[in-house]
Image (cartoon, rainbow, N blue to C red; front, side, top):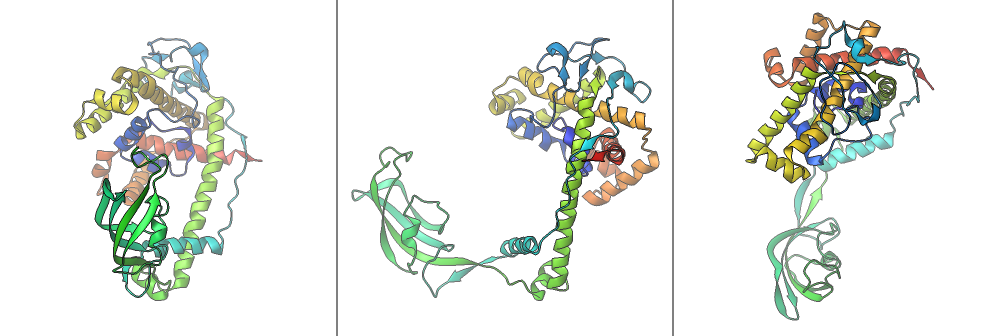
Length: 400
């Protein structure tokens, strides 16, 4: 499991994709963010304290008691002792606010198609009219203050999208209505808060030479277009395909919203008493190893990369960011496995192999060996188990 995974990941119908993503990108996202995400999960890790290996004590899924460090156990967790690590609360007949599937409208299909058409637009030269909003003009310009050219105020062959607001107010507007080959002056004033003090609030003149005008040419939505671009037989066939995709996405989103509610309630109702020390240490080590690999790719020492991204020392980052995330993930695994044991949910070797074959096909791996070069087998098993567990929870949940 990646150290940034949260409670909601378990409840998602897209769980498998979350777990199969390359781990380093997840880790780097956490590092660049400077902290683990808040709001999605409750911290069961005891904040920043360093855990000591103990045999007793406990902490609930909603936080630790008295801000004490999490309790670590020197025994491995399995199906025979999982309930020593976790006490489950209510897992059946959980009420949730049912999220319905909203029908897809023709206007939404039109909007989708319009986006696709614009993605296939091409730039064409315009020679038979003047500049209008939305055109891209190719210009030379040079700026003068009191008749003297100022530094950084000139360029040649510059492409400017009219209406983009890329230049100071008034600049683009004075190019509207101009024609290719025109040379003209633009009179503008820099904003009062301009970052160059000598120019802030000052009137200037830009001398412009307009070389070319180009515009986006959006293709027409025709049978020929969808045949060439998408291999569809007709406009009607393409619209039907788009409707199907949008309906599938909407159904998936509504399903996930419902599943997340139920899973979050199960987590909130559970109490974690202790964590398997070996598993926690292994995940912390993996996280550090991934960060180290990433820092080496960028020619940095790990300590320097962490300091630049977060302002923390490496030891502080491990205690404040990595360990709490690891405890959170391990805690989620424990709750998941406890529900599976209590409900008698088992992933057989046959079911596991079938799911892996599905992953290989879906994500384009060459074979099983290639797949497991990039994916931890235990993480994949947890992903498969998560889907099964949430399915059972939903079968006994009660929509409001």
